[in-house]
Length: 398
Ligand code: SR1
Ligand code: MG
Image (cartoon, rainbow, N blue to C red):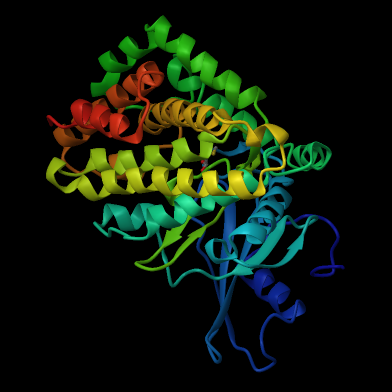
């Protein structure tokens, strides 16, 4: 199909996005369309198009050929748009209620046209504004159990699974994570970005060779373990939520990796929010951490028992071994995420938005300390209650 009468890539404008929506016949013939570019993430253009007559709306997301957060000096594959659209379609097979519906994709223009979710809030923004989202952890635990189980060797014929590994090879986006999550924050690298008052803490972290050894092991797992199709960037900015609805967006970092990576990123971002608020208000976030893990393990276990195709899923002890390994990885990956969101390239508003300088620096020191503790102690933390006890003991006294 020729879109906008062109066959080569060009970034859309608000005008051409409207033309595209009309060409795709996505609105009624009497539609009066209004379009706004609303992308506030690190990488893409996002157009919100609304029919003011019939109150219908869509989103057109377009990849830019570079990382928006840095600029044109950081080229980035347009292929990520196809990965994202395909990952959304895979997730829709298992959790259609937890992802936006995809209406149309075009590889050449690197666009995905999808359901508008603007009746919901980005969970990170809402959490910062004290919204508690009572169903968030139940929904995300379900999302992770179903998506992570169904794309793994536990559930798929090995040949089919390997075809999917091939389909989701995503080297450029993985390299971003390899650098920004697992490497740069642990060395004196130019991409790092931290406040002067953290200098002593950061130098201390860079000098800890035993910490680097543990991060090396976690990075190795990320590089080499093709356990399942991950979302790959499951932080609270990749989730839309309300009091009764949750939708996971933005799986452009999707690839085959270790199950604990998605869980660790989500839990770390709950903890970043906990660190950013007063200690007496943190309990609901700890409950979210606990519920995420219990919903994930309950549903993953039940899928394992009823739909496991790998013969060893029937062997007593293999499920328990697998869940223990996932927990250990989850805790280690969460530790890396806490550190990189504090001193690496891409920060989070939970911490950076703390207005009081002293409180902000203290919160960032807590995030660095908690991150290191989780990485170093992950083998001794054998339950989610142990994890929360560790979290409380590190960040309680501020
Ligand atoms: C250059 S991209 C920086 C970060 O934004 C994305 O959301 C990922 O978290 C990535 O690491
Ligand atoms: Mg994103």
